[in-house]
Length: 286
Image 1 (cartoon, rainbow, N blue to C red):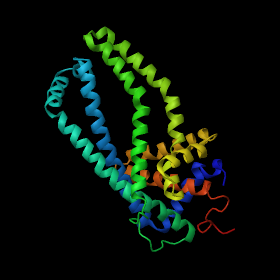
Image 2 (image 1 turned 180 degrees about the horizontal axis):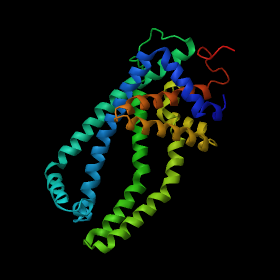
Image 3 (image 1 turned 90 degrees about the vertical axis):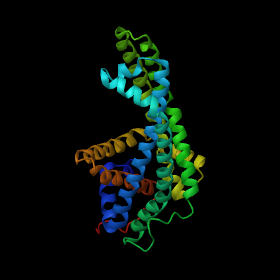
Image 4 (image 1 turned 120 degrees about the vertical axis):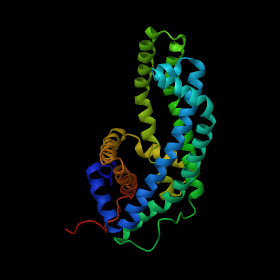
């Protein structure tokens, strides 16, 4: 199946929903669990990142907290951070590591379960917690992608660094200048950032389904997406709509819509790399 058809968001959404309906306990339940683990690892990474950035930016700009949070709130947060920053560092790192390992343990079984259901048209016997010996390589891939994410975020951080330096004398007249400069750098970097992120977005399914090593999985992803980034952008936009809809459902709905998006990525990859032999077990009879 060609990329434009495999990553057609409407086709992929319908096909994934149909597949998940065959084994709802495993695919819906496991997908929601996987999404929860992903979110918790993201919380840990975000906490560590927030502590690191706040620590560095406040060292560059002594008025950082008061400018970011005007009034007594900024003073209280500054005092709290000075006393508790170590907790944010250690707690964020531990949470990120624990749940990153947990999601790396579950992801291979989930994706292979999806393929099994597609190929057989039944729920099958294999459970979602069989990692098929892929835990180590998936964890290494996740750490590699995390490192790449840090490198890709450097220009965004540089924009905050510039803003902090401009505002470091406490002159409120310069605050707008710092904001405009940092916003400009961020907007300029968004296009190359998205270009690179889309290029490595298929590394996970490539490693799990094709048995590649992390570096080879990233290269494989880059070659698969080459020339198809606009089509992948449309696919990603639908997923963003689904994620947003999940947040509107009292926030907890994002676990279900997020699980659906995770499995949509795998379903589209299977269809695209099937070489014309896509699983037909779940297709409507003609």
